[in-house]
Length: 328
Image 1: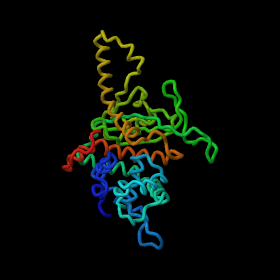
Image 2: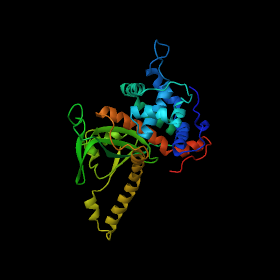
Image 3: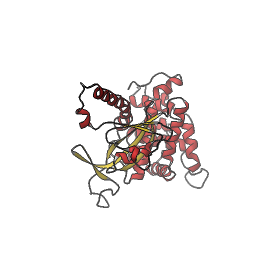
């Protein structure tokens, strides 16, 4: 596939969209990911219309995640936005562009072969090789992702795999994204998707990669070491319930020490907010796009793989001798 020509467009305006794509052009391990997917892709040379290159479709798939585009919206964007065509390597004026059906088939190929998990593993292996991911400890957490509660659809009912969950005094309908994050680097190594009514602690031990010795969780993760799937070699540091912490008497040395310990645990867990911030604010993922947990979980895994690259892009670019392209 020919190289993308982002810097050779007719416009001289360096928009944030172009700056973003320039950065991701350099930090995404395209060669490794294409090699991962190609054995599962249709071969060219058959009768009829030839399939698009895997790298082209992978770039389009990633742009869907970065810019929150459905399959039809992505097809239109390829026609309307020169930067998107350049990034996909489709910058010739007479070049055939993928239809929404081609985009959909590629997504189904990734789902059918469970390639989202392998994409995350490939990205993390690259980052670990560059010294950007350690494995001494894991922080676990979960966030609610809203799903449409309307029954005005073809089936006339809610998505049966989505359920209500109560947070504080408010009820939410949808799914949960459970993640395990490296306590040192802040990068996500494990992602699970469940219905919204699944308790956080139920998934706690399954979010560990197996090589850590320390694990951290907020007050919603009481008692993970007592569960049947607990790893005896892992020491859990779970936050004290808020009510108990407020009742501490800071004037007593032992209780002041306990409060300081809670502050230390909170500072470690604070890193976990960065992947969720990138997911919801940078990539705009605040509501599920598909019906069913399987498809939505596959998208979540891909999004967290991309968020890992986004969070360490400056380190990766510095290693490539590139200038810092974005400030945020």
